[in-house]
Image 1 (cartoon, helix red, strand yellow):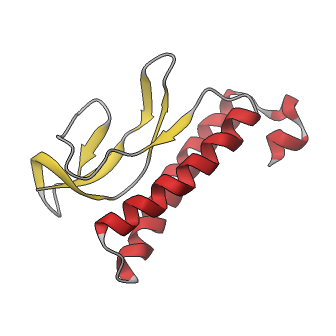
Image 2: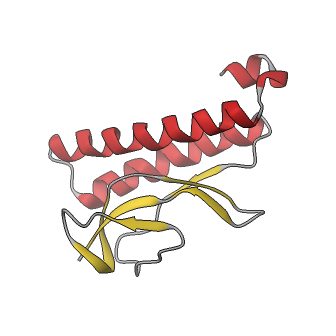
Length: 119
């Protein structure tokens, strides 16, 4: 919102803080969805819808960052995912999303990996 109102305010420090904030938000958001009884499929669908909207806003303010999540059933990829060893395996396929990821698709850099539960 600040970057929309004042485009000059968008700098690397602000972007780093925003990346951390979005990653933390997604962890607690997904945790709340599961606590409310949402299935992993429902949490994925809600996440994909929100991520699409957030990415439109991010693009409109000129940042190259985008949010992403893997699909359920997708094979583990250590370049973009981080397994939650406390709640599942450290290899296999994605059974549940635990946080969103943030990356720059042009530079192929992940700034924040998606935390996932594997099975």
